[in-house]
Length: 126
Image: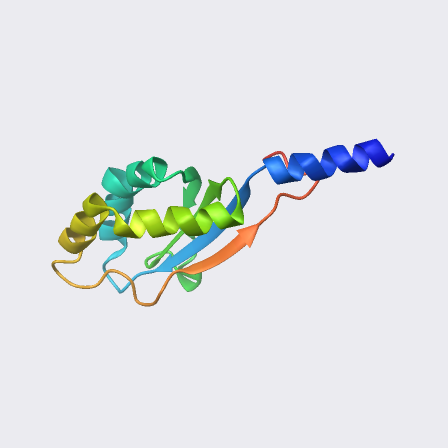
């Protein structure tokens, strides 16, 4: 049993940490944000060690169907996540893309919300 506990601890240390992010856009800016992600952001994330798991738009209007993008990315660790975000924010291509996409006004109504998560032991995603 001790060996199993040690192995499980090692596996978690070698696993990934997942980050759930929620972006709330200004009215009329969701399509601009989706285009930015589709055409640029996901590729730049990959370059900085961020693995895209999935992207979602709520179905219901009262849950943000016209203003909200929710996504999950994976990092190798929480510490690496901080480094990934720092290098992403400093990326010259990202700075250019962000500026160009906001030429007609700010996209986000507020700062993104972020939650770091570990998979439950019964999760299919590890």
